[in-house]
Each structure stands twice: as structure tokens, then as C-alpha cells.
Length: 317
Image (cartoon, rainbow, N blue to C red):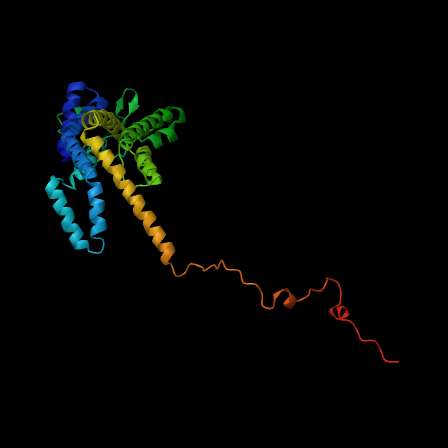
């Protein structure tokens, strides 16, 4: 598989004679192959979200019996022809691609025995890409060394390294824009506002890991991020176009499920307050002291001896 990815880059390099363009075209091909899976998973996720109120009802009905609840859930999925694992398809497809591209790009800039020059792997030695890289120390495209890591670029020359850091920041901005588009139309009954924020910024944190990877991978991910933003715009138009669309129905169902979840939490809280044996008992009844006011002890003014307050009997003459 590494050879296939490297040969694909080599083929596009033979057309463009540019490293960045060749890597970008590979990213376009990969995204075009994954797009049908993305659309299918999005539709499956929305159909699952539309069933959330019914799923909440089944969870409440079979609360004490997990087996019956699972059977009822599976029956619900079958009736509505929903696959709960459909949303995982793009992630499952992209993980192997990530590993393959990472290894293929690292293979292109593999070091020779001298530890300085390139000795590319996975390539035919007669290919133009191999001939352009073998014995070289840089993989330059548009004035940027794609073999250099941004953190190394900053360490070597701070001013020049800022260009590489800017690429990482641009990638983080693209990831943030893409995730914000997804978050703006997603309603989860169980996800808190804090969790939603974490999910929104998680891809941004991932982008900063690119500081320690070759810049060629940053180019690859930037092209993919741009295509994903275009995909999300198409998904919004296709699935959220009007009030009767699948996306709008899923949003409404998500809101209902969230209200049901909120009502359940409030109900459990009120029951706990009523039945909690550890709750302190406070009596509102005020009982006057026995004997009335006459039984109240007289207080001794401060600073005076208690014995002086008792009247003495006169002495007999």
C-alpha cells in the first residue's frame, strides 16, 4: 500500500513537476473516494438522531432490563432501516489512509547512509520523482521545504520558520471552521455545553501536532480540510434545505430528546430529595419553655460576682 501511494504521488509529479501540487492532487483523489461514505454516514447519523425521542422512551421503559432494551433497540433500527455504525465509516476509512500517506511521504525523504541526503523508498528508480529527490537535501515547492518540520524550521531560522508556523495556523483555522459548521447544526441530548466546546476545539489541537511532522503532510491535510468545508456546505444544502428535510427533523427530534433528558434529571433529583434518609430534619414547631416566663433563669450582669446578687439576711443583735 505504501508503494501504491508513493507511485500515485510520482504519477502526479510527472504531470505537474511540483511536489506540493502532486501531494495536493493525491489528497483530492482520496477525498473523492471517501465522499460517498461521508454522505452515507451523515444520512445514517441524521436518521439515528431522528429516532432519539423513541430511543429515550425505550430506555425509560426497559430501565431495569438491559437485554430487553437492546432487543427493543434492534427492532427499532430494523423497522426504520438504520445502521447505528454507519457514522463510523469515514473515520474507519481515513485512519488507514492517514497511516499510508504518513509512511509514504516519510519514505520519499528517507535518509541515505550519510544521514544527510535523500534515498527515496517505494519508488521506481527510473521515475522522475525519484531522480528529482535522490541525493538531495531539500524537497522545495513554492519556496518551502516540504521535508522540513515546522519546529525544526523555527529552530534553524526564526524568521523563515514563521512561514511554516503560519501554515500550521492556517490548518488549525480550517479545522475550526469545518468543526463549527458541524456543531452549528448538531443537537445532542446528552452532550453538555462544555463537551460541545471540547469537540469543537479538538481538531484545532490536532493541527498543532503538525509542528512535529514534515510540511508535506501539512499540505496534504490543508487540501483535505478545504474539500471537507465544501462537503459540509453541500451537506447543509442537501439535508437542511427546508423544514421537512431530514436534517431539520433530526434537529427537532434532538431538541425533544434533550428536553426529555432534562425532565428525567429533574425528576430523579426531586425524588432523591424526598427519599434521602441523610437529609437533616428541621422542625418548624416552636415549643415554649415549661413553666412560662417565671422559670427562666435570671442572668447575672457581666463583671459581678454571682453571690452578690443574692440578698443577705440581717444579723440578730
